[in-house]
Length: 144
Length: 144
DNA sequence: TATTGTTATACTCTATAACTATA
DNA sequence: TATAGTTATAGAGTATAACAATA
Image 1: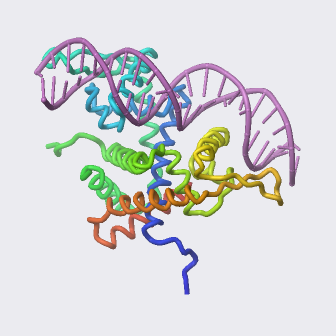
Image 2 (image 1 turned 60 degrees about the vertical axis):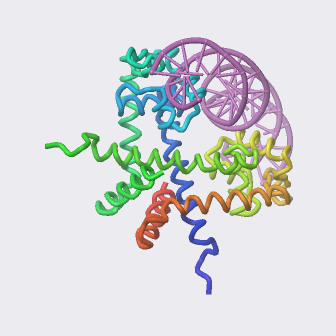
Image 3 (image 1 turned 180 degrees about the vertical axis):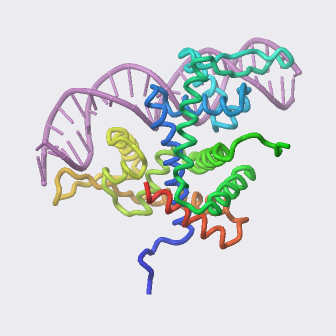
């Protein structure tokens, strides 16, 4: 006899991961909207507040964005007064991105809410499973 | 003494989940590009091939898209000959989306590759951890 | 030569609101 | 009145290529 579903195990894992990923990235949308930020702008300032000032090239990898697209995103964030660009005197090709006071204020709020809601996602799990999940996911993403 | 990092546990989990989510959704990009599909078009046809013909309203929830945006996405996919719309005679408001032969061909290929690569992500984990991960992630996403 | 970042272009995607048709 | 879907519009995001400056 079949169990209640005919969907293969491999597909189930894939579907679950895709659903989770939508949920996670949609959070930036949700949280940002309250402050008139797009999901991408929210991710940008959250990334910078966690790491401190960051180079364009590193943000590019971090956010999975082509450097040209990141230029545009940073342009818009700069126009809104959220971040500023500074030149690196030691490597004059490089550009650092850092938050303005306003950007930092928004970043602290949005990052706090995103983090809290992501953690609430796994709230119901036993503490052991939570630690395990973190370890597993970190291992997956750092081993790319 | 501090350990090697000062990043709080809650932030670590959040960062790990965000990294994983980027990785997962970026897969659709990667896989689709080989067939001249955008990530969203790839997700669309993969969703339809897993579920069979699907109503617009259900796709909207599944892909986290506003119904107006889904209309546009389905328009473009229809113009490319990947899907067709059919009316439901029982509820004449509703529209079903189903794959054309060409759409099905592409969907089978891309869905196969996406699934395989998602499973390869957790390949190194013990089988027990893999099952646990699937269960945990399913529980998270179904409990929204 | 390789790396860092910008500019330019065309297209896709997204948010929002107003609309039609059916239930 | 509520639901299913479309249309319209403006803005944001994306892929790609060509470019300038620096290493």
